[in-house]
Image (cartoon, rainbow, N blue to C red; front, side, top):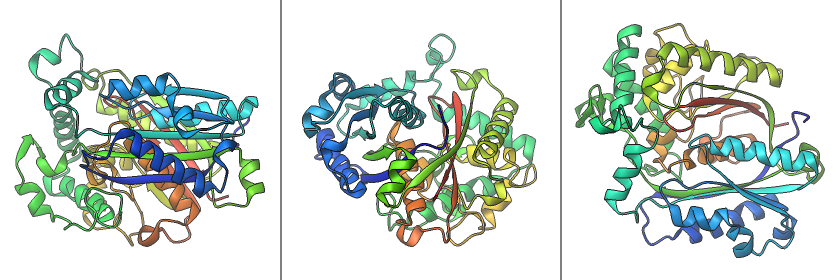
Length: 392
């Protein structure tokens, strides 16, 4: 398959938040219609639908799996339909499947949607799902291990090895929330950006992670329309072009990998993706990083060689990653600022990458943004998929 032959030409999204009266199908209708309109195509031009599998939502997952989206949307030109589940890496794999459809001639234009509504799932079901997803059922689950607990241990190890302070780790949240406050689709849009002191005074969830350093489950959804690079250029619409990609797999469970393995994987996959795109890290105008918790951001920044080892916390604290800074970073605020919509955080991040490359990001728009780095990770951080996107 030839590379550099995929473009995002349309995007649609609903605000993230707690909206129990907004049904899953309402979100699918709204985001898919918006993405099709944004692309300037007729709905019957869509020949394939590849959907991000909703997490902890068996009914809607089953309906999508059996092909209900083309039926509901009346996509008369649809030839292919499937659903993909790779946790937070699902959107990356949906894009790969779309590439396969396009390259094989099965579909010229593909629709990629995602929906999550956590607020109507009974609390015991939500707790039980996230207590088991990405957790070893023999050695972790019986002892009450949670994502927050595991990431807290990773954070403590990283802080010990790097000398990063609690204040510097909290500064990552400040940076993410500054971007989120400017994003009308964020759960924290227009809200106060908490200073470091307020983050560290919030309740301790699992030392050293405070409440404001952890994710908030939310409802949300988005959709993208993709086509070949050739079609996008012929249409003359603003687009985001996929230029390069690489990936690494670590392990199914966080406790069976080391921070060193993560660092090496981040470094190698990022370098390979940049080389595949034919650009250097100095060419990247936007680092659109999705790693869910603050420690992922500091570890990645150092692994990618964007600062000296042990200095990432200072980069965030000094404001270089903030709006207007020299290193625009996670411009929707990652899951910490957007609200965690299951696998949909990766969808929201890709939509933001496309929005930035299309010049549609409003007050968050990175000036003269030509190249964006974007990553995803699935499950409990089982892998790392690095991609590079361009305006041309």
